[in-house]
Length: 68
Image 1 (tube, rainbow, N blue to C red):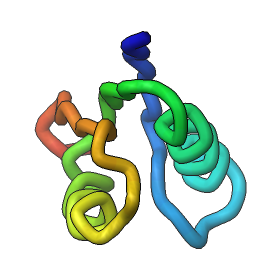
Image 2: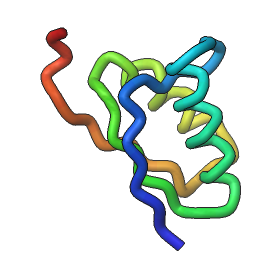
Image 3: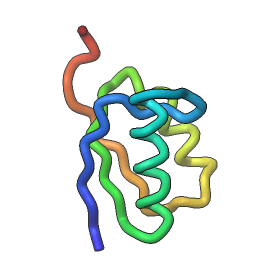
């Protein structure tokens, strides 16, 4: 099954919204193919972590220009 999820804030080792976004994506990607829409600020942190992880079906899609 493929899942498309929007995670405005998504970072590991963070609390509140970034932490919830990360843990939701991480848990879903354990058993499903997950495509995550997120901000450019988060992707610079997430891609290296994804490459080193054991979740081969986790994909990041960037939206926005990073300006808040």
